[in-house]
Amino acid sequence: MQSHRRRLFSVGFLAATLALCAVAIACNVPVFRFALERWRPDPYRVVLLHKGPLTAADLEILRPLEDQQDQALANLSFRTVDVNDLAKADDKADDEIDEQLTADRELLAAQGDAPLPRLIVQYPLALRILKPVWAGAPERAAIAGLIDSPIRQELIKRLADGQTAVWLLLEPSATPARSASEGDPAALLAAELPKLQQELKLPELTTAPEDALLANTPLRVEFSLLRVRRDDPAEQALVAMLIHSEPDLAERNDPMVFPVFGRGRALLPLIGAGITAKNIYDSASFLVGPCSCEVKELNPGFDLLLSTDWEERLATDGVPLATPPPAVAPTGPPVLLAIPAGAAPTTVTYPAPVVVQTSYMQTALVSRKLWVIGGAGIAGLLMIAAVVAIAQTRGQARS
Image 1 (spheres, rainbow, N blue to C red):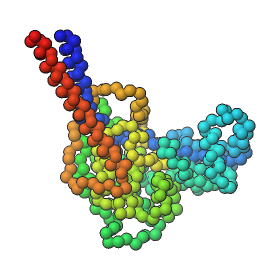
Image 2 (image 1 turned 120 degrees about the vertical axis):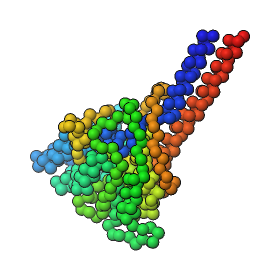
Image 3 (image 1 turned 180 degrees about the vertical axis):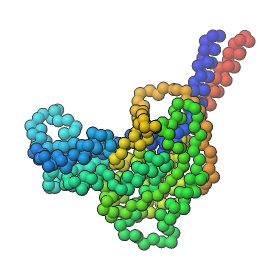
């Protein structure tokens, strides 16, 4: 009799736990705010290939890169590699050649006959993009443009002030001829973004610890537009980050829209005919919705190279924001935890989104639904098992 009761209690507890998980997979903090407060930007890899010792003049030119790294301002990691050292390593046994050495050799080989010293900027390692963002001679003006630019400073200001997203419109160098059906992307964004500010509603936060906000910046839905031309000489580093984020973007001359949120994380773009009211809504609703996965790497997008102290900008009463360690993807067998249920966000009546250039976002939304449906299904089965266990216990009690 007692064993049946213990079994009944265990089944009921497990069912209740899964039911809670089905209702709330993660916190109710909207994606854009969670990213602003908790996601550290991934570092761009900056490598100087040189031959022989660097001169005092060389070191002075490179100092801004070292300062940005040492002061934790720009999200970059800077290294110098003497190619003479790579040649010396050839005499060692294969088992003494580490992975970094192999990568440096491949990087050198990819430069062909380009003169040294040569500065190469690569995307963050997690993106697995082999093509460099930029490569060239280490000159003062080039390094300054890599680290910062007017558009990026304005982008930082708006995001730190709490804007949900800044829609970065990359315009062609020469305005292409458009059909009547294509329209003007800037005009479309100017019309749609104010409407979305009124129609999209934030999730309702609970008193649960995971719903706590870390900064005093007001939580609101606010969008803005920034325009940058491909041929803007002051923004060539930013343009390169955008158009090399996917293999075929550099060859296209279409206008592209990158929604940027958090600490400079950009969603993959809406392009040309894909810049529609429905797709703009789809991107915006994803950012305003609750953060269904706290692990940054499992969310869509890529980080831009920006220079600022985010903790200081988000400081509360002069005290820098204490950003918790980033969440990491779980490993090993799953552990069931009771997650407090949160309130569902208000439903907005709007045409169903049709995704053209944002299939990655559609995947994220579908994944969220599958977790909820799957969790609810499992919880339902366990509830049935609990009912059966109760009936068996009552039958044995009567006998």
